[in-house]
Image (cartoon, rainbow, N blue to C red; front, side, top):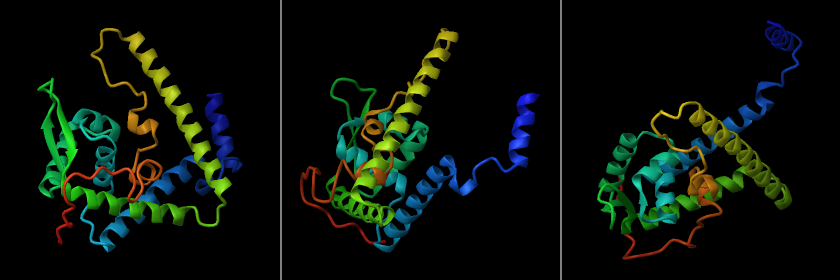
Length: 219
């Protein structure tokens, strides 16, 4: 009861930070604006792909042969939703599924030739958005911001891992669930096209090329 009274008084006295300056709001709004800028730029350049599809392509480009399960866990979506997304990417000639060499239950994901030029274009858009977002900030400020966000992420992941372990200990008979520990993509900061592409893959760098680049089919 006393706790509720304190919360009420905080609201009455305007002790809470302004919504548009709170940490949670800023993180959410930056993510929202990055998504909007990416999708606007993709439409403008005729790139028929969503931000989430772009994230999948970048992750596969960085780690070809990754399993569908790992990608679904990284995106935090149901496997069936990923299957539909992969079906679409396959129809576009961007992604192919292959059987795992030793485990028939696992399907691995690989880029097709036409996806190489698409990945290059995604990275170019990401770089442009990053420059827009960091306009007016010194290199030192940029580095400090990224370092601070990385530390915040590590802190939250540590708390999630501890909560998962406590929950598992309290219910030992429960069926196993996916660990909240950061996936390889998350550990590298590749949790969206802007973060994942910049710093991991850059235009013309680190994208293996097998076969010819097929131009993107016009819509």
